[in-house]
Length: 155
Image (cartoon, rainbow, N blue to C red; front, side, top):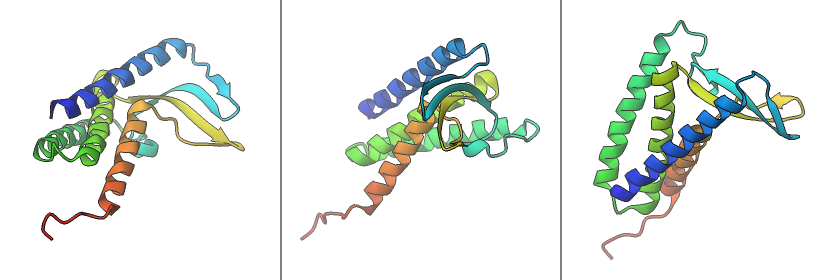
């Protein structure tokens, strides 16, 4: 189980370092055009994915903190129970690392720090961060893992 928690911890560190760097680089409030389809911007998202509940009066932060804590406890329990299932535990570790990374932001800032802004033809995907990417990749791996054929232990 240690390797799965180490992967999550590594993601938390990378996520927090990237957010720290972006808050310093983008502190002036100006975005940076990196490519014709990617900008670096500084956004404090008080909501959930796609800014869900971001315009609520503030109660949502406590709700998202409780959800993240409950999810983290549940994921650690699953990691312990299924420690030998590589793909499943890799997916859970990615989700755990992302959830903890965003949880730290909510506790420190009352919002999640987002900075990656992908766009095309005038349409912008909601800004996101490394933690969000980790959660998304982990969720996709869980879906993939659930769709894979199972090999029966008994002939």
